Image (tube, rainbow, N blue to C red):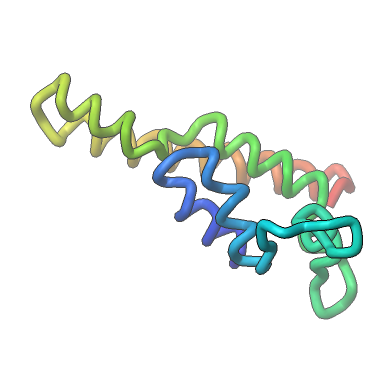
Length: 117
């Protein structure tokens, strides 16, 4: 669920993913050595049976998604302005989003089948 929220927040720009995750986990600006940072909070997240939620395989599938998906609103706005039509930005958003999801899904499921999940 939190990954989905991070992806929605990253629609403005890819850099926003980390700050959105920080907001979701309640990480504030005043982080000192005593407090738990975002990295530690994510490492501590676990399913009810104790398995970690964020594994290297989850991270890899997220990277595949971000590498392929065209989520940046400004990119879509430029495509719309250049083509003077909503056809290409809509196609770009749907096609790259679906392709990114499929490849991310394949990477994750392939990793699970190979025993990395």
